[in-house]
Length: 399
Image (cartoon, rainbow, N blue to C red):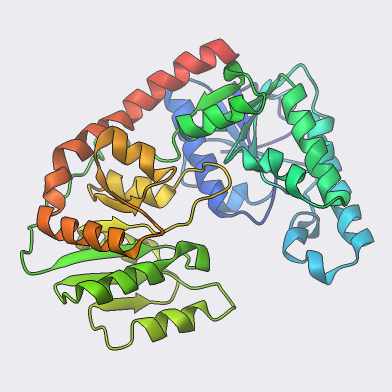
């Protein structure tokens, strides 16, 4: 159902994203809309940027705005180096003003708004002009988004980053949605009060959708998977080096996902894995069907991500656990906390290839079914029922 901004229908929440070119975040917007509705709130999605195209997998009503944002206002971060400084900052200003119009146009439809993701490009003036009588929820992916200006050289972007931090800290009606307790504690440590944070995991399991790995164990092969867009910070070369040391063809390693690094990273991966038939490379975009199939066929998800300046969540990690697959992951956030608390995988030292060798050998010895009961407990923790109960409890305090 689609209504216009002139049709006055009151909702508990109206949701929209604040940028055009962060398409993967629209999935999170849809998930949040669904869980809010199941928690008993009335919800609508405003068609501000790409919501009408990317948030249609729900029965949530949409609100059309009279004035559409020109795309160029919100994709400039991709083209910053190709346009003049004046043009770049002018369009950032216009982007902010358009979002102010969005809030004004929607103020009769709700008093609680989800205003998208907090990134280093979230428009600052938009945050400055948010009316104080409403509640605004923004997805705080990581605390470093607010503090990175302190380690940057002074320029206009450093100033806007500082202003963004001050505005988020000082506007009590801006609430931060966090994906795990480590992120929440990091925001609290930089001055955000606990009652201004709302816990909502990046992924959860809908009722009736819980799946455990009942794949018949193949004693001859141990299938290890790394999946997602490939870049240097993913360090899959460490896994290749570890497999070279192990020299065991029964451990099959699949690296799936397009490489976007233009500095020769793919060529380096190809060179390192030369003569290793047990390393399978799929250098292309993995669609949903193949994504599901690759998870179904693997025994473990292997992560080699380098640590971030502050903790973030990891959707791939959660998706593995949701389908019953244990992890082999570095001994740092966000993997360390989940594996230590729930016992859903094996930790290793990212800076020590021998540590990864031990982890891979341990995975082969234990088999994935060793982790079945612990994964079941984690799945219960991120079940839709638990998330709804937690959401209702926290929102009753916040609003």
